[in-house]
Amino acid sequence: MFRAVVALVLLGGLALAVMVAVVLLPRSVEPLPSASTTASLPASPVLTAAPTHNPGPVFAPPGVVSVGMIERGSRSGETLVLQFLESAADAIPDAPGSFRVTLTDHAGDGTTVAFVGTPTVVAPDSLGATATLVAPNVLMVSTLASDQLNVELMTVSGLGIEASSTAALGSVGAELNGFTGSMVTGAEANILASPGSITARP
Image 1 (cartoon, rainbow, N blue to C red):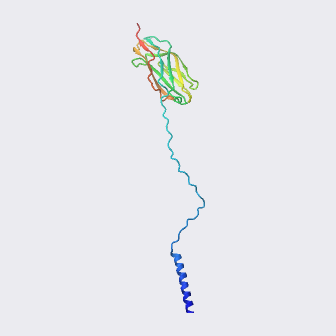
Image 2 (image 1 turned 135 degrees about the horizontal axis):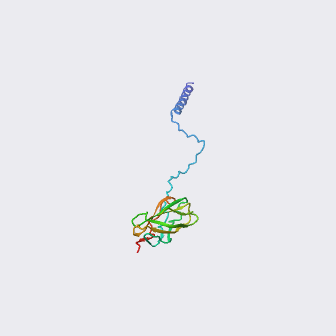
Image 3 (image 1 turned 90 degrees about the vertical axis):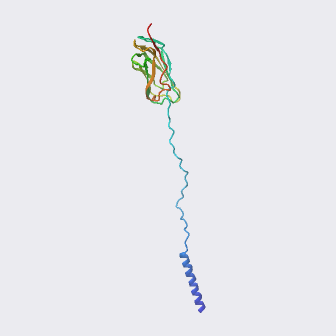
């Protein structure tokens, strides 16, 4: 009987020890299963700014067919030819624009020389080009649009040059200026070859 009691006490003590060990020992925490699985996405590419288009000149160096000699106090024949060749197929934006051709005498005076005649423009229909005298010595060339796939050529003719009796002797100056809109970047050479030369009367 005594042995049975001792065994029962030992058994109770063992059970108590097991219970204490279970309570005191650290438990390993199992992660809870996720309700949904998120797919791993590829890293977003780094966005960089698109390269900025830096347009060059709209025209190559313009071509000039001179009127030749102009005597003071007289005018030349209407044989002046100005040619404006687009520097690349898309150099002229598809938008309106204009520029001016300004004449001066050899001393830089614009009041002693003038265009004479009526300007005529030959150009592709895509340009919608026109030419108008906006001052005696200033020709304005305007366009409405452009063809972005082909190089375009404008030719202005039908003009001559008149020199007053006080015009400085020597070559006449011609400069491109007043660029607006699609023509704002100008030409590769804005100073043109001389369209004529003023001489003294014999």
